[in-house]
Image: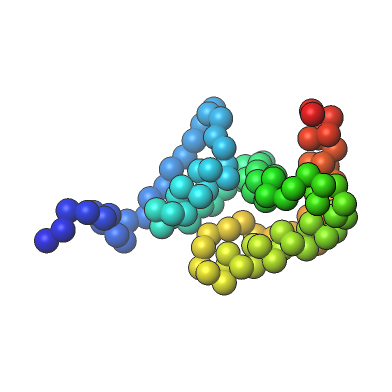
Length: 116
């Protein structure tokens, strides 16, 4: 008999946060690696999680590559990344349409340019 692993593997674990600051991409990856599916719960939390995941994805690019790529090209690469996670049975957020992702890429670029 092993004492490692989940005590009740069929237990539906729900974690609810209230009035805390959480790095959604880090939390999502940690829960994903533990085998839990992340459900953001409401539209604001979903957008924060989506923006966090998109921002983390964009940080993988070298600055000159990111600067030379169009918003739509980055959005397409992000869609491919998410589809790859789905194919590997890893949890991920639902994808909006390509044009919406491209708009978020543009907004995140403007936000990071203004901050830096």
